[in-house]
Length: 417
Image (cartoon, rainbow, N blue to C red; front, side, top):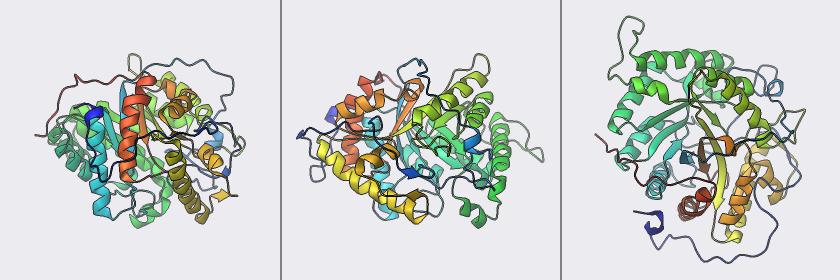
């Protein structure tokens, strides 16, 4: 079934008549004054003991991000995969959040999306609604047949790695080999206390636990001599690492893993006006330079994208959602000042509006042009469910094809065992 023929219940369908009015250019590419926001990312930012924001290895961001203002020539290549990402933030009770997210992923599959990604969050429901991503993806696997299913991310330092390896192996088998495993250090530092761990050790724990995953999936003997059952050596080739820094990107490349780039990340104190591309292009350079010879790059770029038929709808939901997000950051002491909607759009790297608006905005993102995979999310706009479904349709029908993506209608169907 093509996306154009997908059915949304008429009682919930978003308006589709284009009633556009001229407005200034929208999206993250629009020129505007930036707000002073500490850690412009969806989750709590990892912090080193001296207060600097850190990546998975604890390295301060400000020591590690090199501005790239020289107009670097980048080669724009069509993405191999188009993805949908959700933190399950619909304004609803938990069971309804899970139902809506499942419906959104199923709709993305019908519309031709290649992958769907979910994030793990502990305790803080306004940052993310899912502590058990592999459990949830097992349910999604039963209701889909083709779309790849990924974690973005599992907070691996908080997990018993053998259990993650086992659960991932089972999920990959029952989904027909569709699992992608993204891992990272986690940003909610108070969660480490609840788990009886020291957040200052999260970089070390991440490296140790990731090695256990690799050993288990590769069939190598584990402490005590046992080996993982069921065997899933192919999962070693489907590991992704999330990071905010050049050094973290180098580590991911050296390991031959995929690199996950966030829709937003902390701007260094000495360069608060850096664009997302100016921060992420040096990361991509470092990743590519570190890849083993012959290893194909895997670079996933996530971006906030909300596409509507009516530009006024996009702005209306952006104003409400971004102000909610701004207020949450203010309560946490991570934002100073109060900005206009346009300033919030720029500060949070949002691409929104009609398909033409979003196409123009994304075309200005030179880091996105270098990615092998593009994943769209609606956070932190978080419009109502029917508008999310419509945005999914417009991304697949209008936006992604204009940027070079081609729907793979010949993709094999992978059914649940």
